Image 1: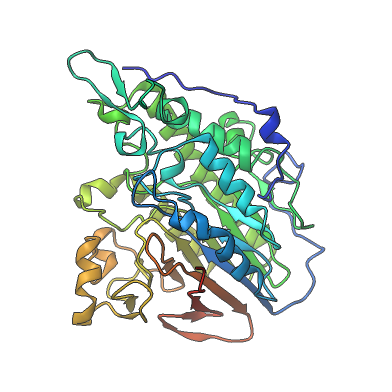
Image 2: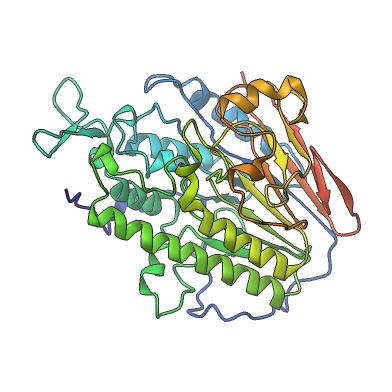
Length: 425
């Protein structure tokens, strides 16, 4: 079965909307070069959010309606350099529509600081699912039975075709690389800085990196969660279509190259730390078996190898599994902390009160056991941001190169963070 992708979508009306995502410089080379304009600075503060706003059904807009108040709460933080959204702007029970995406875009226009966004699976990779308004493969006819409304119209954009929805996301949020909304911050986009030996990398406008004056290199990579790196056959077909398989191959290779590029730039610029933003929780079984995580190993291998070579603190922020967590899955038996209930103070994963959170998302007490591949990377740490459920939450993260904090539920080396649950309704 071949799913036709709708490529190179242009939306003149949409392109006139404010651009929120920072992307790209105009260099065509990814050769590491030192950034001479970085001035000495020891601290930087930023915010991280993800898996928000969510709804329990296509008609549940409570979090969506509260989102402007959530944004305004973040705006009231006086010293943030940017806010990062690690993907999933709606739940897996809501439809993938152009109108919804434009609503999010218009709400995000309310941010008074730069917004960095890496797409989540719910916005594109999972749009084919019937519960997101896509459809179901019909084994008898070999066709797709699409979800339609009472008038027979498709409820999803392009019938939930994942690549068409990814194109839509790119046309909305990444339409003009190099231009920042309300900020002079410039980032490097893979769409503009790629090896010409790999021309398909130029599609990856959402993958960016930039150096902060405090000496932190930040990088985003598009890794969809919950689908074993996007390899679950679209619409529930028996196997991946050639189009899907090619997308997985191209995207995966591009992400691996971009991680290499980011760490090479970190070394060239003598960065003090690297921070990675992505959607996929590559250690979360998501109700399946460990076999459903195999396609994420390539990224973990790449992060582990680059982190060891870099030798300085590397912090990974991701969403996907929704429950706040702080740990190092690249060291067996490393300290692990998790929220026992939405918004609750994080406790040790070994605490009996943590059992409900660990059971709900099929995460063992030691996340290393879900990817037990011989890693031993002590300078690595990850934080899963709280999402999906109320209270809505953002992280306020401080990097201070003058400190070396212990690994806890809210600190790691030069990093410390606070979980903030603002009142939004």
